[in-house]
Length: 399
Image 1 (spheres, rainbow, N blue to C red):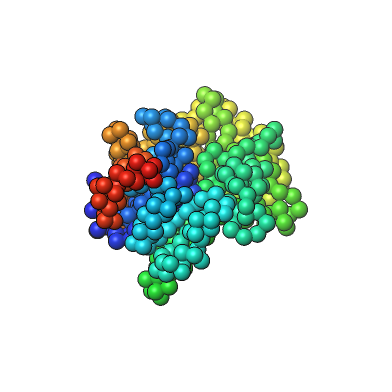
Image 2 (tube, one colour):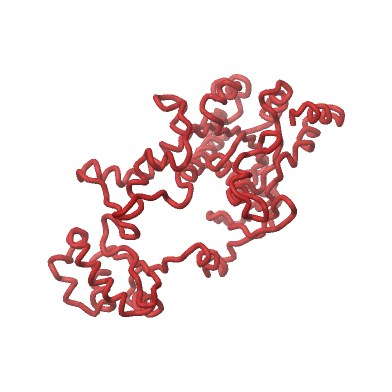
């Protein structure tokens, strides 16, 4: 059961968000998890376009269900004067404003950080953009895979035959995480100094930070890390090998002690540990093909259960290469009680993962995923709109 919002860390904090897709909704959902009131402003007649990415969760989008629990949805036409008036009223009572509108759209609507600071000096504005709000690419649209390509991430994934995208929206997730932590920092700063500071995060710069290690490796090594599938580019042996029963199991060697244990207790070749080709980490990477042939041969002699047993007994870190179905049934999630039911539009309840950060004495908020505009009339009534006013806004397609 979700904790009462007033007992939670961000109780009393109101967030207004003009958000769509992944990055900004991920940031605001995490604020909602901690008890913030998140008012999601959507377009009349459809709402956030992520609602229509797919229909796999009882007719709802898997992206939307993931990113939008515990929020209130209000539909507003922000091109209409009446819609802008409602938004200004919402912002007047808000602590945080988050937007990831198309390039230049926030400024045209008077919702840039500087304009907001003049009208709402206590408001913390957060902008999530593609390539920043200044600079040569400020006007470019940016989606997750575009940013994966621009940062060079795609050139590191895949294998020797082809590059590949990362299988989750990693640029969006990175930007959402930095927006979330930036907002928390700004709230702390406002609480301790009284100053509301604007927050800005771009997808490109968020993922650029995550590319720092391969960037250093490339700048100072002269070549970038190779694409090696499940093999680690700079550590060996560190990768997946196929067992006799066809199951892949990944192992990781991090130091010479583990390497010696692998040779002795798993490979049955204790003398291999001192072989000059493999005696150091750099040597093992340099002779990766020869090393992989030795390890792969041993894997091919054993079933996956036996491989896992022997690696465990030798103290070697290892993992089954699971598919998503196996992940869903993972014992760590079930036995640690990491699933909670969340209601989605239509009244169906679906399992959702608890947030990964456990805060002692606090249970996260796990409230329903809203239908588009579900809370519009309630919020307008809170702002003082009479029934006739609300009906007029609906008749004029403002809400």
